[in-house]
Length: 175
Image (tube, rainbow, N blue to C red; front, side, top):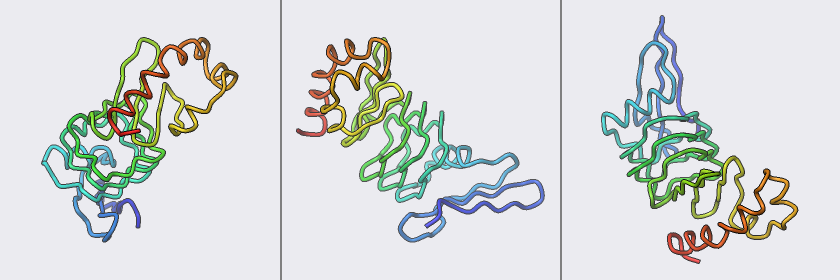
């Protein structure tokens, strides 16, 4: 399945958002200077049902997706950096390899923790601290040398916050 179709007529660009399972068009937008981010934001503003949308690898950085219905959407490898996902329905959504740096989580599928040094986003499988994005298992198994190589002062920070981060995972996603 493709993410959508881009059709250019005269000076306008039409972008279609397709269902990841059926390939049916679930929303479209045609305008000058159109892009996937503008199309998605328009859909959200119109309260369109984007459940099952194929948004794999889409650049949605900085998008306002609050209250969006993105249940079962494919957001794998999407750029969601600085996106507002507050109150978004992300149940069943695929967020593997999505860039969540600076994003505002919805408190259910994405837990966001603001910290003086790093912005932290946690999903059921991934922890992103600053720009470092690894699985829960990878983070828990990193040795001191690996953490030290990540950033200046990272080891001290990790030792101070590691237990809190894994407690947040346990409380929100189960052990």
